[in-house]
Amino acid sequence: MSIPFYKHSLTADDSQYIAKVLDTPFLTSAGVGKEVEALIANYFGVSSALLVNSWTNGAIATLLALDLQPGDEVIVPAQTFIATANVVELLGAIPVFVDVCEDSLLIDYNAIKNAITEKTKGVIVVHLYGQMCDLDELYDYLKKRSIWLLEDAAHCFEGTRRGRRPGACSDAAIFSFYATKNITCGEGGAIITNNAALAEEIRKTRLHGMSAGASDRFSRKKYNHWDMQRLGTKANLPDILAALLPAQISRVEENLEKRRLLAARYRQFFAERGVRYQKIFENVISAEHLFPIWVPVEYRDQCIYLLNEAGIQVAVNYRSVPSTKYYSEKYGYVEDDFPVSQRWGEGTITLPLYPKLTLAEQDEVMSALDRALMTLGM
Ligand SMILES: *Cc1c(COP(=O)(O)O)cnc(C)c1O
Image (tube, helix red, strand yellow):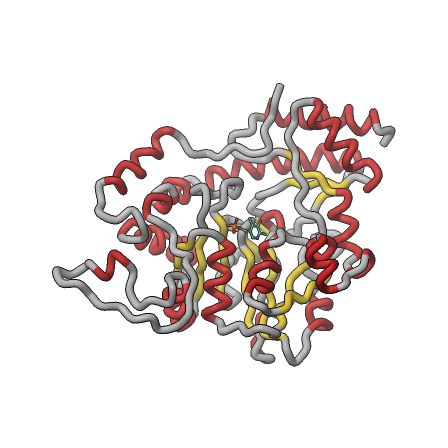
């Protein structure tokens, strides 16, 4: 049996939505995107949603809108995907890494407080693997100090904490619709916010800083002039991709149930064997985006090898970001600077988890793991 790491949930039926866009004059951002933005704003109960062509470009547009300047500091967790830090770095600002908590693997709030300096402009928290951070107190604490808070919600479209969703307790939350995410259109993302003024600025920074997009420039009979009001990037999502999102959003709860069942089976299996995985708080419904486990560092790569030999694709999410060549050389980080993130990153293996994974396939993953653990004498 061969079990891939990920399979999207789109079907041949979904091509009808693409076909509809082919009948419109502009394949880029226009009416379809606006409908999807309304749908997303409604799902999260926020005043604005803006589609973008990736989390990364959406975050850059957001940081531009927040006027992040070279030399400013932004606090980010060490345990995340590199993009969380890269967007800060790309604007010439400084990503200040802090460690994560031992069991939840979510950013450590005491470490955030200790890392704040007079140069700190913002904090980006990450809802790692689908588990939301608890944001109420942190948001208040930061607001009092005029520090903004962004949510990297790339893993957490459908997750909740104390019944609340991303976007409720921050300046903005950013999603990814990249190929392996719970909702995908190949490449894409969205920004949500309750701050109308910020949304207005992002509307410009996601499209060169222009005052009107293509569909708006030609929306009336006469050509509408546009102006460049500030410096922006190119982050708008074309309608031809946005068209794939509504059907997936309508199926999101149904797919979450499938993910939850699979994750619960993994948890029971690994709890019985004493294999470590992310602790989930009682007030959380995780989006169950990824299911990573941890094996002692000296066995990790052999374990990946044995799983691959058994036809099972796995991944590593993530090596500690400050331990990568670029960040460790540029900022002079050493191995023990972020011990929790470092140790997790050296021992972690992510197993297949997606709605199309059958229970029989999951059983196969689990028995291959049993065999690997036995072979390695664990
Ligand atoms: C995937 C991911 C991103 C980047 O998303 P893109 O849409 O590929 O730019 C950012 N942060 C996290 C935590 C991610 O997993």
